[in-house]
Image 1 (cartoon, rainbow, N blue to C red):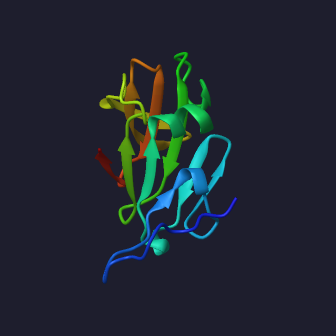
Image 2 (tube, rainbow, N blue to C red):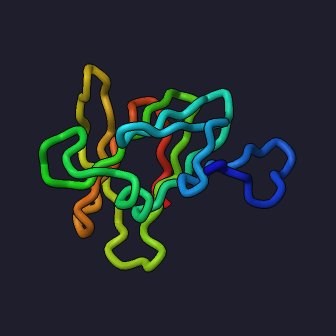
Length: 127
């Protein structure tokens, strides 16, 4: 599926990327990992529902949790929110992990048994 921006951007703003409408223009996903393209200049919006839907159990760490990974750099941003229902949607920073020699910050939702690994350098906003 292709991602289409919602509405019109304000002057100086970039489009936000919505995982449910993932586009090759600004991000790509493979094997439970999302690769961001800093040149797109767009934040990636992720919800707990996205992690649960697009992630997989024990993809990167053997801890029984559903996991999704975001790869990127210093010019990339992730906006991480809870579920649409609002129950059990709290994300907390849960330390760091190294996968294939790359360092990630781990965000955990213990109520839903989910983890998001975000490559060090990517700015993450908990919404």
